[in-house]
Image 1: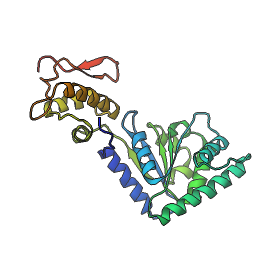
Image 2: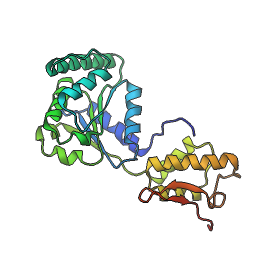
Image 3: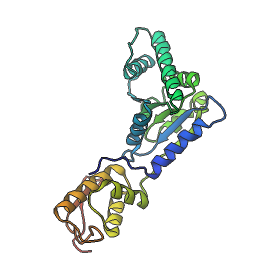
Image 4: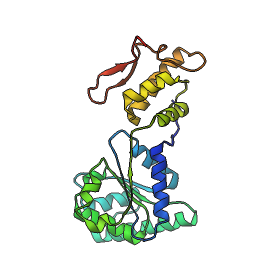
Length: 255
């Protein structure tokens, strides 16, 4: 499989939200909430954005405290971690400010991503710490979760009011599926097989990548005719495990 990042419709919506935050009116409304079911490419998308822009990525822990979070933030920033929470906060603010100014001089976006943010979306002290950093820096601060963040934030109006963009990752469209196969798979795939795979994977990136690997391995051993691999070519072959039952789904023998 080709090592390439595919810009699906979810990716394009996320990037649009970054642009909207950068062009916002109220300076303090720089929080972005990204949510959606597991397996839709949220983490991959955010890690790609972080790598492209030299931003900061944290994965929240269920037992996080503000002090623990600030310590991990400083470790990611690769700066010495002081002892007290107050000194950690000041150090983090100073280093993030420095990174933000460097990014501004280089004409690139800088932001902070906190993945698995469902773990902290009901914890007032941590959210207030994130809000304080976000307000002081006025940089895109992105909370990534699996559907509970928006509901939990309603309990904290001072934080929720800072959210200017909400991006829900959806299951891949048939166009997204075609794009993923065209850009990642070493073997051409016919529309009938593509539509079957789109249906059985339910548009989840995780399952689509598994299916691409299976199709590619088969196609490299059995090169298709012009037009790409068809359902007839792959009849009886395993494609992907069912998300709900874990049972392997095969291409039907009769097509």
